[in-house]
Image 1: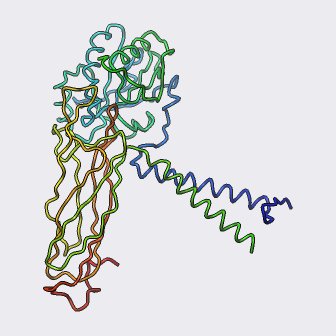
Image 2: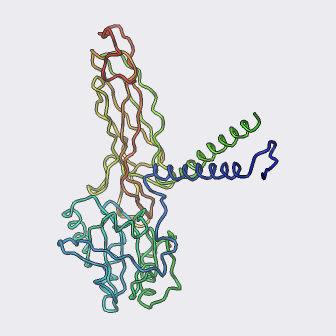
Image 3: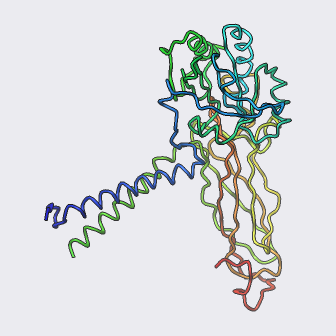
Length: 207
Length: 181
């Protein structure tokens, strides 16, 4: 029988079992802590390595009640923005998306907003109308959020190329100039400036 | 005997590792409910209640009266047992804050530590003993560049009902359906 001298003799299977036990309790502790944070630090299915992955398909209702699928926009560059009415940073960037939609539509850009909101549809509609939103706003579902890496916080934006693959993933607010760069890169089919799953520091005063 | 000692050491290590795993994740956007001191009260009398909450550094939550209807106010909901009554809760005024990316729009927020105060009262018929009041803090946290979904955090504290000069106590307090077991 194999044994290790650790002050006392202990056989190998017992040692392995103990190590596994320690590791299991450590990770169980972390898991429970993450749950107690309201899922704020849960692992993501597509996040840090989202670049190059096929964007998960979805079918969601828009504010008019019409079913919209991601595949409806195949061949376009899609700026998929998860947002909510209670999220001031999301509100800040929506007028920028309105402007980008207008300026880059002819080049194949389609902005899509996904409202991850508990508010009723009328509230969301009034909110988007007040901001002059000129792109489809869909009513988000948990399943869609899960498919896109849990959408742990908002805003959470995916830039999807014409081939349906994720070009870039940006969590949190970045400035207007950086968003436009992401759009240009996606339209150009470039992925050199991609930064996925990372909150990028925004330059101040660059609006 | 020595193997048993070793096993105990390993199990204790595992326990500490588990606790460390939890502690390492405490830097999220959440709010910590600091322990609420047990409230001592006489039957039919009132006592003040103070609940203190600490918001993690770098984050803020909306005050109880946000500047916009669409924003989610911070609220505390208390569920006392039948013989304990909760008066109106008093929330602190929010700190007026403009986020760097929208300087023209003022928000009313809490950051750091804030207290919610209230008054508790018991009925005259309440039995002596310790009663558990359950509470829920609902809030929605943001940093200056990202927001987390609304969250409800449960907490609890004890109310100790002690004999008073005008106590109208029951003969057998243990029969009270509200008493904590």
